[in-house]
Length: 193
Image (cartoon, rainbow, N blue to C red; front, side, top):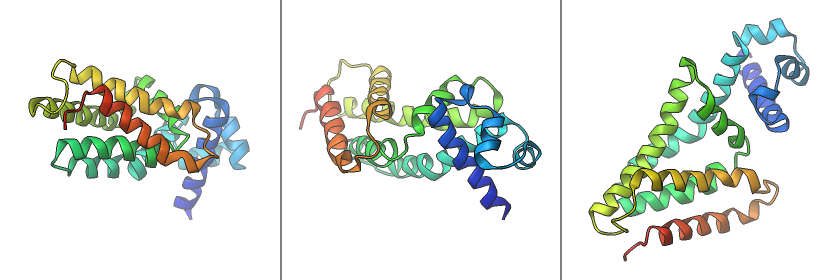
């Protein structure tokens, strides 16, 4: 029962973060009111607002980001890996989880030890893209003059920006968006077949 209650509080918090625009605009009073619970009950499940926010991040990370990264890392061919990462990150993560608009921003701006693990997983994502691009360069498959670190940041920026303009009610466009993202990245990398 307690895990079900915790999950309900996390889902309620996600909806409030989206509605109010982030953790700074969402109070524990808002959360208690929306989840229909008292502040002592909230603090029974989560020691603090920070602990609740961390739980929201960890829940999202464990459910979506880690399995995707594990699968991507298991792909030996760098071109297949990059294609997988762009397509699946866009289609299965970015276009299915509007809360990432808030969570990614929070993960980048939180400056305490509790968010170190969250930042570490997002950094692992960046490093895998960067290293994949560098590997493709060393194999002579993409433009040798681009800087892998900057390129990885541009790719991630482009893909995560989708959370700001995508209409999550129009799910039928997800494949087209993933295809376009792949086209833009591969064209920008000057992919040599």
